[in-house]
Length: 197
Length: 197
DNA sequence: GCGGCTATTGGACGCGTGCGCAATATCGTC
DNA sequence: GACGATATTGCGCACGCGTCCAATAGCCGC
Image (cartoon, rainbow over all chains, first blue to last red; front, side, top):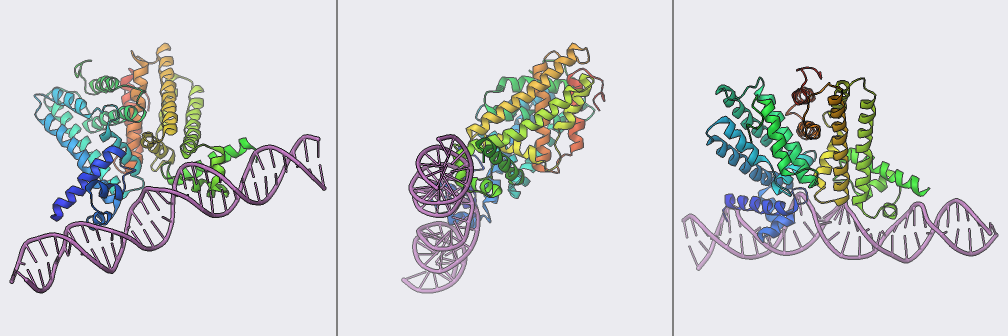
């Protein structure tokens, strides 16, 4: 198999395993078994397991980011773009992609490559949201003195709420997450209550 | 050694190791070595490693909770109590206690006892904050139609921002966390901008 | 001093871990 | 059809893991 294709196949297999087991417990042998090949092959293409996991996380997380960005850029208005943001970002119960984020944040302390990838993608999410807010302010739809800070607040609120849903299951519901985070965003951007529902 | 004391010693040793290595990578043998005893002893007192880790996390997290609760109950006003809340909750760089929370949230999917403990303590934090907000509304200091939801929003925002500091280090600073979360809380509770600084 | 109870030891058991390397299979090129 | 390059194998190495258990040590009431 061509080197580029093989690399992609390894990453794809890693994603498949991580989807089932989580990032933290995915091993070299799991990935090899998933592809039906040997474990040595993985080390022929990647210097360490850290790099493999980082590449797999990168694929999943950047796919979600691009999907949201694409849908948001096609929105008719900044308010509509924000609505799409909340709809696509909020995870369901047992959301495997968000569980990957939880694993990545925790593993960041132990795996340098995972930390770098996680940090970079978090920054990209924040930048996407910041641009959307700035567009809205420019168009007169939002009132916000600090788009950068507001983006961090909205994103972090969403992360914090989503974390409760995914890690603890029953504490709060997906409905609460959407209602509560949109309510905070409306206050943050000077919108009428319910403008984002 | 008396059974009760031994149990406490095991938990204390687990905390000491987890402080260094994180929850996720703390092993039976680490704990035994920390106490200078054998690994078999740990299983004489705990049914599984899951239980040991949950007990250790419980000690650390509930200590922080009790400290905050004590300081807040001694506050002169609801505003002052809230100020103390933000001051004590916001983690520093490389905050080992908050790294334990990150580990617990991620490990929750794999370790039932850890999940139960993490969920319970998260709920207690939310309840503490909700009571504080209700007190403030009763005293006429806050304006808030939904203290329960507001408590979840403030807590989750803080978790989400703190997560960036601890997991990624350089994306945002502790100063930003305090400034941004107090700004959101002021909006949330009908306070003047800067009332919580 | 003795018997019994239990805290504690130390290691076995069966896995699983990342990593590295010699041997082999499978190509495209001449 | 032979050659050389390289993708791929299969296994070894040196650990580390949670769990369990027979054997021992040390203390208590008698």
